[in-house]
Structure formats: C-alpha cells, structure tokens
Length: 270
Image 1 (cartoon, rainbow, N blue to C red):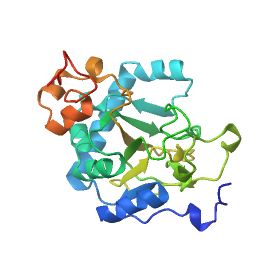
Image 2: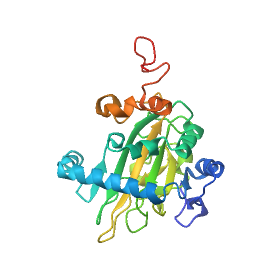
Image 3: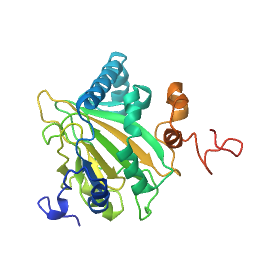
C-alpha cells in the first residue's frame, strides 16, 4: 500500500547541484533534481531549437499522423528523433552530469533508447500512470533497467502539466496495476533549465495543463542497459552526420561501438 499524499514518503528531494547528493536522492526517492543544469544562452538555444522543430512537424503534418496513430488530441505534441534535429540535443545526451547519473544508476556501457520531447499545451490531458520499464519482462530484476533524464525547457508548474510522480514507487519493483491508475501523485515543480533524472521503475505521468495559454515543453532522454532494444531505430532514422562526428560515448550509446551484442562479422561496427 502506498502512502497518502501528505505523507513524508511522498515528499520530493530538494533541488541540488551536488552529484553525490543526486545519486543518493535517486536511491531514496527514485529521482533527483539538478538545478541550473541549463541557463542563459544554452537554455535559450534549446528552447528555440525545440519549438522550431515542433513548428516544422506541425507544418509538415507530422502531428496529425501522431494523433491518428495514438489517439491524442492536438493539445499534446511529441517531437521525435531530436538527435537529428539540432546539435544542441546531442550536447544534452552527452551532458557530463547526465552521463555520470547514467553510469551510477545502470552502469556502462548503456544505450540511448530515445530522445524526444513532450509539449503539453493549454487544456492538455493527463497521461496514463506508468513506469518506463513496463516493456521489460516481469518479475523485474531487483535493480533499475533504465534511467530517464528530463530537461525542463519551460517552467514546470502544477497548473501547466508538470510531470507527476509517485515518489518511492521504485521500491515496489513492479508496474502500477489498473486499479492504481488514480493513486496520489505529486507534481515535479521546477524552473526552466532544471534536469530531472528518474530511474525506470518510478511511476509517473504527464499532468493536466489547466492553463489558458501556457505550453510546457520537456525533453526526455531514455537510457537503458545494453541488453534492451532501443525505442528509436537509430540505424534507420539517424542523420548520417550525427554518427560521422560522434564522440566515443555517443558511439556506445547509439550501439555502433559495442562488445558481445550488435557485432558485425564478430567485431564492433566501429
């Protein structure tokens, strides 16, 4: 049985810049909040690149296809394959603090399963409560199989649809049951530029956007242990220049530099 909304167990960790504390927060709460991870010109560039990509998708009708395929209305927009959209998103994937948390939580090597954005607009509805490793066989191993690193492109508020979580749900080591869909959650309230990392067993969902004119953009980079297939098929969708100029870490994350799995004629592709 999970705790009531006002229970100390449903409290959130305090924002920090101390990575050692952030790792302790992930162990205790299932997540951490790194304040000021993006600021100034960097934050402005990410905001510009994301909303430009979102506008481009709308102009090409991509959002209509997503609504048709996934039964969403147009108040919520997903922007896929950010690695191919602007180099600033490559910088987020390779952010030193983010990769430090990845290594501490799931080890190395790891795979980048996906990096996409979720923009919820005025009137945007809630997502279904879920954990990110629900596609992994149950019973789950007694350790997280992935970690999601979320970047707040806009302020996260309770009113504009901030991601809502069940702190401590990672300790249950199972996905939520259908009868738990309405269980108490708390919003991840944070200013733009915050990095929020949560391990893959944490229950969470997009909140309602109850505002009349505010959008809430967030970028989600999903990393998993290397035994799992990536959500995005990088070998088909990635712009060639991304691989051509990729760092050693990025080649590992994309599955081009590997050992044991994904070999070509018995050797790593690169």
